[in-house]
Length: 229
Ligand code: NI
Ligand code: MN
Image (cartoon, rainbow, N blue to C red; front, side):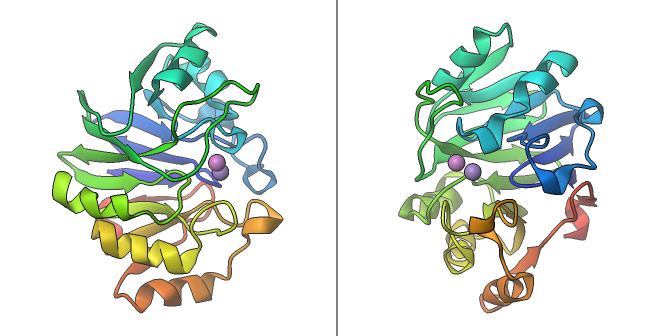
C-alpha cells in the first residue's frame, strides 16, 4: 500500500492495483502548485464532505479518469447530475469494493457543496484491505464516536488525521483521537494551507510522541509505503 500526499487533506492510496483519491483540493492550494492534477491517477474518489477545500478538483479528475465518487448519497447525487458515476453511502454503512471494505464513520463538522447544496452529514472512512487498514478522518472534532472504531473495525495500520485546529481538531485533540482509534502511526493532514491552520511541526510531533505515537508529515507530492511508516 502506497500513500501519496497531494497537499491539504488530499491523499492518494494505491492498494490492490487500484488508486483511491481522498478529498482532492489541489488547484486552489498555493502550496500544491507543483502538483499536476492531469497526472493524478484515480479509480475511486472518496469525499469526506462537500466543502470546497475537499472537493474542488474532484469533477475534473473524475471526468478524466472515469473514477467513481464514493461519498454521502447527497454528494453522489450532486455529482451524478454532472454525469459522474458514484457509490452513495452514509454514516455507519460499509461496502466491499474490489480493493477492500470501506466503512463510513461519523465526523463532527458541517457539509455543504460549493453551490450551497446540502451535502448530507460529514464523515470519515475506515478502509480495510489485504495490504493494510487505515482511518481517514476527514474534517472532524475529537468525538467519542472514535472509540467505536477499534470495536467495530479491523486494527489500524495508520490514521490520517486533521491537526490544524480552528476548523478541525488541533494537535492535542488529534493525539487523543489517535489513542481512541488505536493508531500508533498518524499521518498529518489539514494544516498550513491557510493562515488559520498553520502548525508548528516539532510541537505537533511532540504532542503525539507523548502518547507513544509517531506523527508523519509528508512533503507535498511525496509518497511512502505503509511498511515504512
Ligand atoms: Ni470542511
Ligand atoms: Mn476542510
